[in-house]
Image 1 (tube, helix red, strand yellow):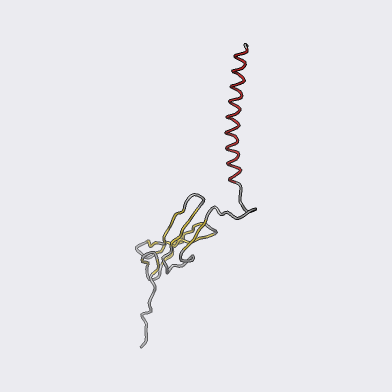
Image 2: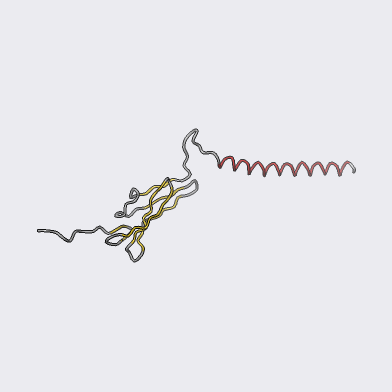
Length: 122
């Protein structure tokens, strides 16, 4: 093997090692940073859930906002099943949960219709 071939061989090995180390380090650092909780310095929640009607409130139209580290999405309570059922969205342990509830008097605009007493006395 002449000196030129040997030098090219070492340059190829050093270049391959550099790229291998760079890719390995990038993946190792990503896994490392994904495991950081932030609880030692200050709490960082990955999910943030808020509900405008305070939770399971079938008589009020609620708007739930679900945020993660990258974006937020909004979800509104809605009626289904020929306007008899409400799909109620609420926060459970900082995540969105959904419950289907049959409204006694029906559903309108994302809330159960309030029943009015028809047995009034004069």
